[in-house]
Amino acid sequence: MTTITFGDLSFEIRHSSKRRTVGITVERDGQLVLASPPGVPIETLEKIVNKKRYWIYSRLIKKESFNAPANVKEYVSGEGFYYLGRSYRLKIVDELQKQPLLKLYQSRFELQRQAQAQGRENFIQWYRQHLQTILEQQIATLIKRVSASPRSIQVRELGNHWGSCGHTGDLYFHWRVAMLPRTMIEYLVVHELVHLIEPHHNSAFWERVERIVPNYQERKQWLAENGAIYNL
Image (cartoon, rainbow, N blue to C red; front, side, top):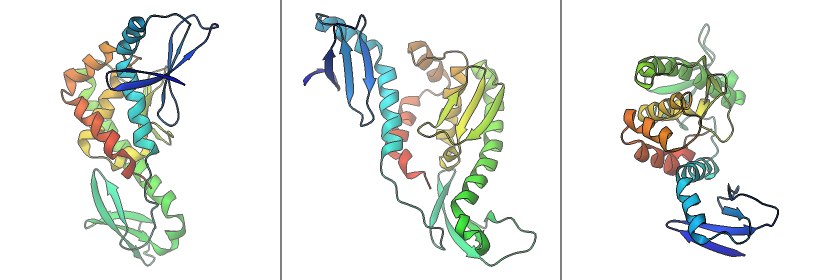
């Protein structure tokens, strides 16, 4: 295996006579692969890597954020659950008539005993409902600044993504976003709104993000280092 390093990025080089262009891949384990035709000068490879640095960093951040180990939640009294960056303790309560199965009340979550076995499903539903309202309010305040408006805003299970922008103008957000601090939610909203204008993670995309969130790099790094703890 041949490796090469450009700055803080190290790549495994894979030469192939069948390739006509240079390609960069971020493997599942975070390994960087540079696939190249034989004979491409090192200087040319370095220029290509520098041009793709934003994309490489964004892919690495997503993998770090979602692949880091997280504690498995237990739906018992005393367990902590995040909402908007703050951890609230859970209390299992006896059945209450005309009360929701799960609610946030007096700085704690209350889950009815009858719903304890479906605790995760109840939390996901609760997060989805509350995040939908938060996103709609946040996006309404940012539409003019970004100069873009989504066709719809949807909260879903998105696997290894905090959010995504559909080609028809729909914005999707992971229900986990409800657990994050509001500053992180703002960054993710701006990120996806800008994708309505700039679909790729190129320099023009990040320049637009920076105009609205000047410290976006700090927020992006924070997600990479802390995102895994916001999970069920």
